[in-house]
Image (cartoon, rainbow, N blue to C red):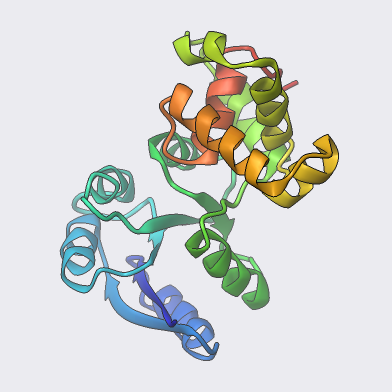
Length: 213
């Protein structure tokens, strides 16, 4: 199956560079481009891509607004934020809104390709040190009612998620079956009302369940 990608960025050079990298990879194809959030929403509704690479700083309906609209669609795409600085306030808000992760503009081509495949497969791009920094800068000590409903094992899983471990790595760490990990992760997301893992991890930091420091 070929993964379909939309590139949303207001810089022509960036879009062209990303398209060249993606279209050169077997199993990946760029089906559309957009220069602002409103156009991103229109292109996504028309072309139904698997993944949207999104610049959050765009004119006329910015990327953050677009992400919130995209993720409210009946069959939303996975969204990966493309950013210059990992500690950008908008990146943090995009993760809170449900983006699957972010990549820096200086990311190597092979890392970009792997990132697209990773989020399309249902995993997330979670960089522990970057998310810890963002949480320390922006965390507000908010109350997350679902935290108190986590079982002991679900709490263990959430802490490992905050360390950036994949399902495979969590299964190894806890010496349990992969299906068990998937169930725990799903239950954690449900109890924390989180669409993606970054949302759950941010909730863990902001509630004090895991310390960003």
